[in-house]
Length: 289
Image (cartoon, rainbow, N blue to C red; front, side, top):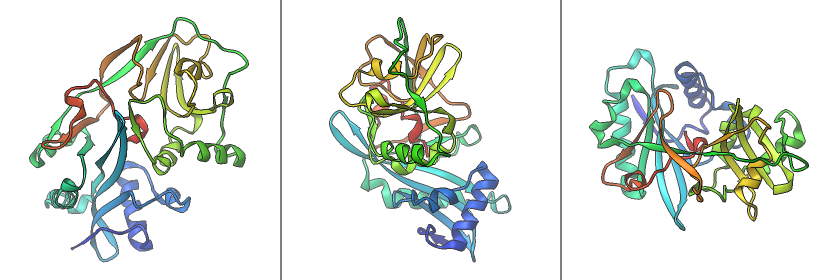
């Protein structure tokens, strides 16, 4: 069994990796690769037998802007093992190798674990931490000429527009993911019906309506405008509450509540930076890898 740290450009290994991801998570990275979005920031560590990937854990190199400083974080993801190779310690071997390579080269290491492995990651020095989601009651929205229009990623012009904006930061986020084009394009396939262009505010929003609640997952652009104005472009008459998929810089009028996605727990590596110890934060929803 061989450890591979570069499979992206090896067609046979990449196809096997995608097959395992499809079987494990129901996802494939092939379209993302063909669109040129798989950059050197996403580094699978794969154990292989011949041209077959039998286990994997990936490094996601991520730069965040926090209180005016750039912080380099490593997110571990796409942890999977072929069913025929489980209970052999392969995930342990991969996580150990990743920490050996990256622990001293970053400010923090984190991962999102499902409920079946909550006892696994503490063995490597990870501790579960609590995220907080901010929400705000909307007293008066301003729907009118500035209303946003929904983008269709099947339309070439709309897709180009979204690709352009996906290279922009979220100026309203306290914990801001930088250089996020590749990860945003990956998430776009899951949120394709929730992408809006607010031309009046030079912004694109990923937002989902659920009755009287608006989930604002993320904002791309919009500098120079007030957050409330940008949000108003995607509000509906029935909108009463806005939930944020990121931590806003300006939390005036917001309440912060403990947040945990279904079957998902955030773990942070002990001994490295842990912003969640002293701040009511969440990693942006579109930063999950």
